Image 1 (cartoon, rainbow, N blue to C red):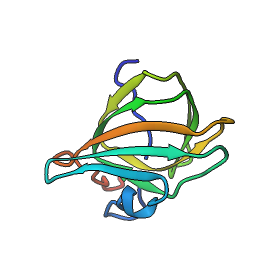
Image 2 (cartoon, one colour):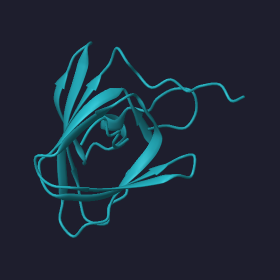
Image 3 (cartoon, helix red, strand yellow):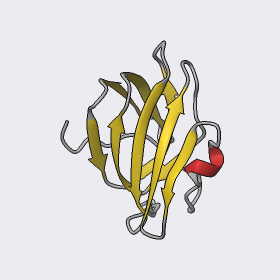
Image 4 (cartoon, helix red, strand yellow):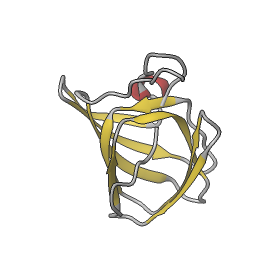
Length: 122
């Protein structure tokens, strides 16, 4: 899968906490000063709220059909099989939609020392 950037983001200069925005979707497994590990379940047709992510790693627990909608107007489609994974740099503002017919379930581990930082517009 390579360095595929995946899921999650904000509006404004400060990141919104994914776990606080989506308490019914995100189960906190570990939350330390160094990292956060989460189990996410997104139901069919469900759309999340805008948030960001620190640099992260994800692991698909189920087959997933997702569209990540970025605040800048771009979309990315992901068709994942259980067991596929990816990692990426801090994620810009976005929300995620489950376009499949089954719940999408995955693990996400964020490295808090590498948060999303909004860049100044030129």
